[in-house]
Length: 99
Image (cartoon, rainbow, N blue to C red; front, side, top):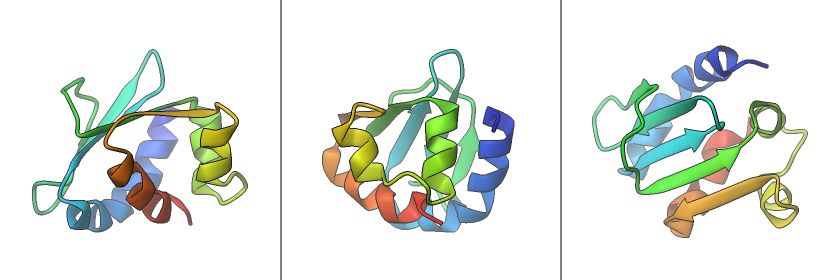
């Protein structure tokens, strides 16, 4: 799954990100997605702004999380997902990211 595919999969979930009232950056290394849940409706861009919570993950692992084949907690525990910033927001994201 490409970053464009992930962006397409996350777009319908933007109202759920608005409920977080936070900014989230998903860093894939060479590309990123920035979700601004402080806006209503939330926005999804490729900006590299500072975020309340940053997820560092490969596109493949995030795709597995989105499809429910990889548990976000297990991904974190095994180093497939790294979190910087607010871990509280990261824990809330788990329910938004799971299908």
